[in-house]
Length: 314
Image (cartoon, rainbow, N blue to C red; front, side):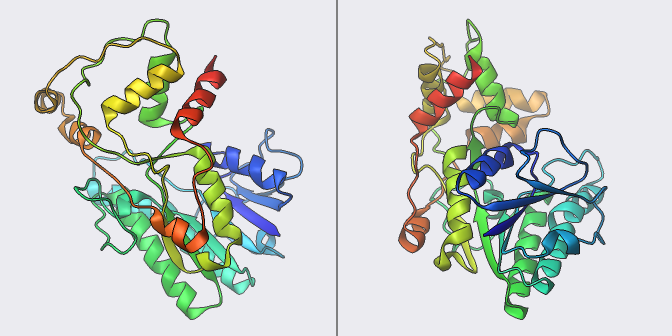
C-alpha cells in the first residue's frame, strides 16, 4: 500500500514513519523544504510555502491513503479574527485542498488527525464520538471546520474519510507541557510543585498507541467515514500523573498540598487563569468505539511508555 504523509517533521510523524516502514508500506511525504534526517526509503515532495492553491498532483500519483498530520497549533497575534484566519489557512483550507485533490487522483482513504478539543476543553462525563461538537477556541474551530468539509467531500466523492481526535499525546521529546514535565522529572532534584491536591481526571494517549491506531485506521475497512476518540484507557489526575512520572524516573518528588482554587486565584494575577483552569479541569474520553468497531486495544501501558521516555532521556 502506498501512503502519502504530511507533517513528517513533527513529533508524532517521526514515530509513525518508523512504524510504517517497519510494516513495509511504501511511503511518500509532502514538505516545505527537503530534510536530511528523513529515511532514504521515504520519497520527499517539496511544495514550498503553504498556500491555499498548492498543487499536490505529482505527490498523489498512485497513492492509496493520505495520512494528514500537518497542522498549526499556535498563532501569535492579539487580533482574535486574525488568529482564527491563521488557523483556518493551515488547518482547514489546506486540509480540504489536499483532500479534494486526493479525491480527484483516485485516493481511497484520507486519515485526518483532528483534536479532542473539537468536543470541548473539559467535561464531567467522558466525551463520546456521538456528542455534539463544542470547540471553544480558534484552533479547535478550524479543526472542526476541516472535519465538516471532509465529510461533505466524502458524500460527494468516493474518498473515504477517517477522523481521529486524540487527547494529550505523550512520548519521548514530546512538545509543550508534557515535555516540560519530563524535563522537570529528569533533573537531579526536581523542584517541589503545588499539585498535591489536584483531583481531576484526564485521558491521555501514548505515542506508541496513537501511531498503532493511526495505522489501524489506514487498513481497517470499518474505519471508513468514522470519527474516533482514542486513549490509553487509563484516566488519572494530574497528581497521579506526576507520581507516575517520578516513579518512571526513579525520583523522589514533593507535591505541596495547595488548594486548586488558590492556585487558580494566584494564576489570575499573572494573566494565566484560563491556563490554570484547563490544567486542573477534567477531560476524559470514551474510546470504546475503537475496540468495538476496529477491535483495537492499546498496545502499551502508561507505565511502560513512561519508562521508555525515562530511558530515552538518560
